[in-house]
Length: 240
Image (cartoon, rainbow, N blue to C red; front, top):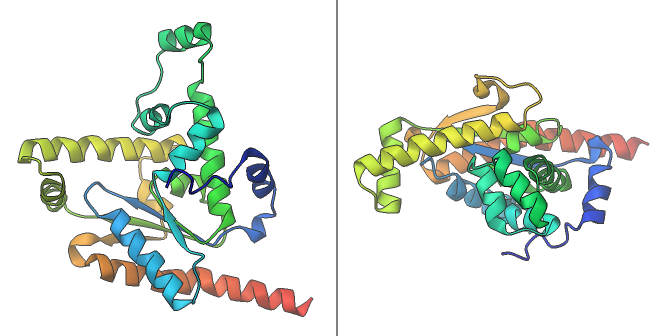
């Protein structure tokens, strides 16, 4: 998977970022509270969309983006992972890295993440899981932004099963990761907001829907919002 986005080299990325905004997407972003099975839902959406439209265009992405960003900055993938996890450089660390010739500032990491994620979303036919996608791709017209939530202990139980953790460790894991994901969404917003729920087109409670049901609902909402817009766009083109 490391080579999955090799075609997003710097020149290609620049050309995509310069494209007219009317040509962007389609893209579905999925933000999720910890333990809501976001990857499983995304994979199900992609399989069903490709089957429904007889294509192989749709793909889902989450951590694969890290490899492309690390390649762009010529640094280890762990540096990008740390940024996503909220482990940013201290002033002293920045000074040491600057003198050693290995300096890559948090600001440069942030810009690289933003540009790579946005170029992938603009290219379209992507289901993006996390990575601050709702903040970065919010201006793409042909987009659907989804939030997956569930009660705290439902999610803790899910994490305990999947990661073979005890109750206390799973509670800490969920609380810590929820906070980091919230901070990441805020990082890429022009104006921070405590009520991130208003950023999304729809919020689904996973306790009420299986992975397959959640995927079906998201596809239905995608078709109502985005596919209708794409059809209108094609109709306009044919007129002219």
